[in-house]
Length: 510
Ligand code: HXC
Image 1 (cartoon, rainbow, N blue to C red):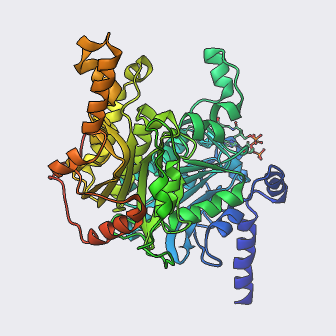
Image 2: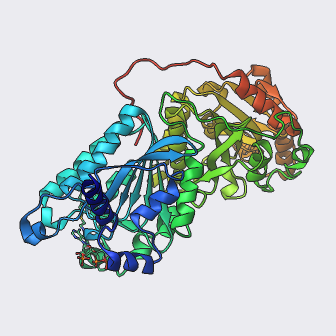
């Protein structure tokens, strides 16, 4: 028996060495952790249970039968994050460059199937040279099996991808279909075709970093939700994010102890809005002052900064926040911000996370760039997302809510549950100047008359009371009591039940 147990230990030791010490050193030399070190940092101490440690590939071409390392380039299993179950796969770059073979894919598929069956998130740590070249179509089929599972798991369990090395070619489409993508600065990149192919086809000379590095994907393409300095930071942030999310679409997000009084009054909010309606202010200040202290977790902070998306806690419970940011493009909605917020709202709705919306929006950004880029369809995404969402929705208009953007931003008309306005709110079809120039066009040559018309338009609409008269605003609230009002609103909605008519699936504008 002793020998048998020793053999098991020897085999385990061999498996843990992956592609060998030389390749492990090379991985460390690049500033990257190994697949196993990453899992250790991601999960609670000693919680990892591995599957398929001894799986080996079955390829016999190109001399592959001479090297059949245990694990086949991916470590899979389950463990816990703050005591809550997650499934994880971590690609091992030291084994055939983490490339995906038929058996490598089968290992990933096994834990994805279990995650859906048992209702727990899937976290993929990607570090791979892509399809295992020696296996040809068997490897492509493996990817396809993973993709199909990404699709089936979408909206059922949260899926998070961390890109911690190469992720190229069709391989990018698995992370692309997950809910959140994190990247590590300088050591990770994602692209469909690499710099060499780009040069051959389009003559553009571009580095891998510029084409698909963390900065590109968090600032320009919006493919990634956040970028972190190194593996350690990225994994710590995944832990933080998981702690905010439910384990599946029938579960509730965890309730954490809170020490911040839900009735806290914040007098400084009474002076947040500048006296000049065109002066910007930082909407993040409002979010942070309303949230349980220190709970704000921003998503896509570097992209479309004219809208803020992220999670906060109120009374220890997770709430999704969407807020116009007057400091960028005056808080206008445009293609990028509508896409960013639309996807976020849909994530929240899929996983029963209530949504808090702060509104200060002068309208949609005008211009040929926007119209030719399809702002009609992209703007509709956010409108659609809010309108179909059945989770509790609480909205606070702080200042401007003009035109279509007023409707889009979780208005009463899109089944907002609580629609509050600050006394500084201005709800109208458009700003006073633009409105006057249209309805009093005949007086355009007379500045005095135009000034009078503008003033009377402002008097009529630069307040929340016309809207409140109609009941489209439930209550005009004091800025200082926003946290209290919002906490009470969400507390009253905890048993909300609302469902949409049966359909096979919707047809959101894409
Ligand atoms: C098999 C691979 C491999 C692959 C790397 N390796 N990629 N083995 N299939 N796709 C092996 C290398 O042979 C090497 O083995 C080890 O991994 C490390 O690779 P290096 O090249 O030495 O490392 P590095 O210099 O860091 O370069 C990493 C790399 C490069 C940029 C990823 O290896 C590379 O370009 N690989 C090919 C990438 C690619 O074209 N993949 C297919 C993409 S298309 P040894 O034994 O020397 O350590 C695709 C389609 C998916 O993925 C479609 C889905 C539908």
